[in-house]
View (cartoon, rainbow, N blue to C red):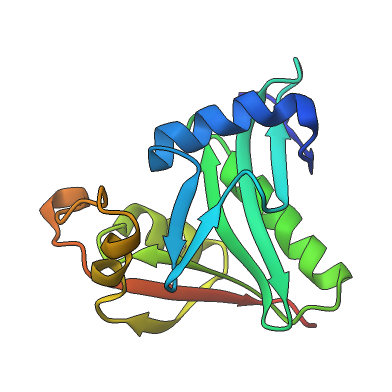
Length: 163
């Protein structure tokens, strides 16, 4: 993939963003730390290719605790889209005076854990049983995740953005 541009999502990006969320999450809803997020209603950054097609999306939420990455997804993993989106989110956090970018992944997601740690995020907490609780809000969450790993816990990672 060639160069991508990261920018705020626009109305015309909705179909492309929704398609990525449908593929990755089975629809517009994700559960993190006992909160149900509707990805159609939170701020979103998009990565677009030279033709203007959406090739990645990062949905986020900001509060006093920092910039929380609620979802990050690339159309084709391994081509730099996720990295570009995370860098843009960290830049946004710094510009807003927020001291951290943080996110949650699940205990089975070794690929994501490797990806995030290589980009400077550090594991700061584990919420045992968080995925079990999330199933009450989203019953379609599987019991067994990637690599046959039982899916139970949320891992919290953060990147300190203050310099």
